[in-house]
Length: 93
Ligand SMILES: [Zn+2]
Image (cartoon, rainbow, N blue to C red; front, side, top):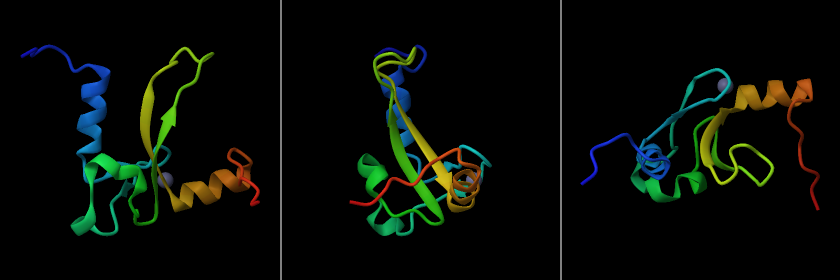
């Protein structure tokens, strides 16, 4: 067993076992709405209290090409960044 530094995949798995993540903007903790149905392998499909958790797939052209990050963002920061024009609401349909 390799006891060296965690590889990116190991780090990803450690993150998915967490029952909460911190908002990437303000740091507030975002927790699953229903821990009874919390599945750490499908965390991005959970319901989160006051925010969201999702994956960020880094594409070709990025110096982080191939990395998959897990991030959380709270509703307040979503609202603020939307008003600032930093993030956009994808049009429906
Ligand atoms: Zn926030």
